[in-house]
Length: 363
Image (cartoon, rainbow, N blue to C red; front, side, top):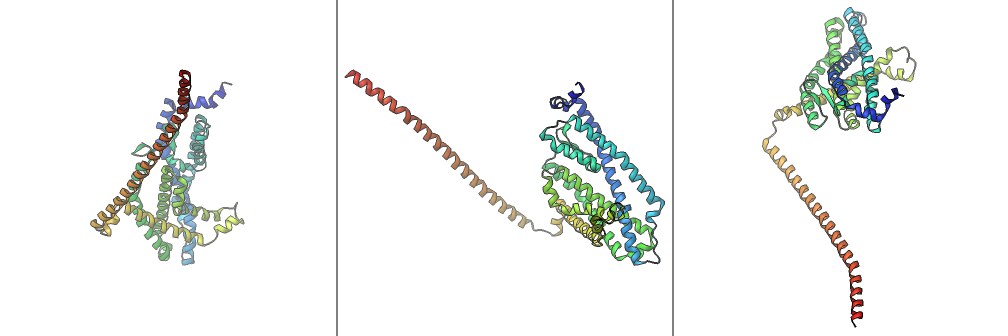
């Protein structure tokens, strides 16, 4: 029975924010962030080796079927990166699972904790999602490099949007040469191995940037489902390569899912979403930095007029709100006065009857 004491909710709640659990959370947070990011890097490497390399081989072989012989996926360097990624993922996965089991043991099994336990399960399925997990032991804060422990509020979301703006401009500039080279320079890609390697590196960097930003912004979003709906293009960019990967899996060949993955439009759709998503992110980053305003040379007088119009609307709304508050207060006061008069009316008949009785006695 002594061992069951650890599972009692009161015991776990009382020991949840103990110094030992808080200290463990502080020590492990940077390491767990690092291995989660490395797991995401390994995923990007495998997507390049298992998805991008076969797709590029297929497209360039059609361009030069006689002269082109791909060596990227068979070189020692490519195989070394692939084995390193697989080995790293095999090592990281048990670490994340052990941490998840530890959190499941020490945290309460209450209804308010259901989302923490759900996300813990998701971390076991995909350890890269652990990158920006909120810590219940640190009162719902999350750990970020340089920033340390932060609360997930509007101020943090605004700061991260500003920090991501410059990298996403770089990604937006990177996607254009990648697509131009892949579509219009197929012969050169077939002849030069360094060009193929550059394409694979660019594809991996773009996918990693989209996945890292998506995981981070979902982690700090107040309404996660709404954020996913608004940024479904990013999710499509992240998930579409996995459909292409199904073509190389022996276990699913012949199934409807494999037939769907063999549709040639899948790769084109992934490129289209990648271009669209990168363009949107690049423009969003320009807006955040204020570069768009300088590029289009927006008149400052027009900005002042627009702000004054917004201020006038806000003042009208404030006046209406004050009038509504005054009306409600007046109605409440009238109800109080009516109740007071009703109470006084109930007391008056008794006093009049007592006066009449005393008058009769005097007579």
